[in-house]
Image (tube, rainbow, N blue to C red; front, side):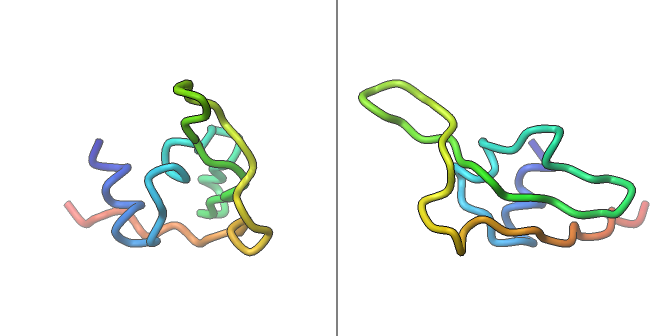
Length: 68
């Protein structure tokens, strides 16, 4: 859960955006994160859907890992 909180706090991601992340959205080599969908509750069921607006679809630089 620490990674999710770190992303939320450092990048300002919404809960649905974090829960909608897939491994294909994460590029560890270039340290970027692509936000292209979110997890939403529709008629009582969870489903992945595109972001609400085109502006919400974005590519972000990931924060550096914490120092040990």
